[in-house]
Length: 133
Ligand code: SF4
Ligand code: SF4
Image (tube, rainbow, N blue to C red; front, side, top):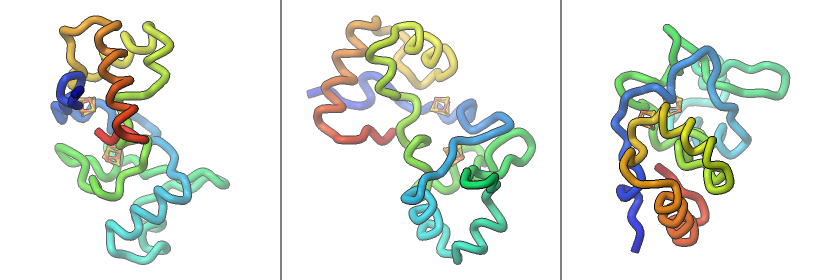
C-alpha cells in the first residue's frame, strides 16, 4: 500500500509559507482556524486575517504568513489548501506543474520519476478523499 512518505515528507523549509500573499480561507477554513485558536471570530479576524472584500487571507509579517515560525503554528487550524500542499491533483495531468512544484518543495521525493509519482499519488488519493500533508 502506498504511503505518504513514499512521495513526500515535509522538510519544514518554510518556502510555501513565504511571500506577499497567502492562500485564501473558505468558510470551513475560517471556522476551523477560529476553533483551533480558541478565540472569537472577531479576535481572529483582527489579529490574523487580511480581509479584502469577500476574500480572507492570513496576514503577512516579515515576508511570511503570520503563523509561520520555523513551522506552522496553527497546524490543526490551517487552511485546506495548506494541508493539501504540495500534492495538488493538477500534478497528475501536467508534468510541467509537477516539475515546478517539486523544484520549489524539497519535501517531494526528488528521486522517483513522474510516472511512479503519479501512480503513488493516485493510490493515496483513492485511500483518502483529501490528502492532508
Ligand atoms: S511543504 Fe515543501 S516547501 Fe513547504 S515547508 Fe514542507 S518541504 Fe518546505
Ligand atoms: S497557515 Fe501554516 S502552513 Fe499555511 S501558510 Fe500559514 S504558516 Fe504556512
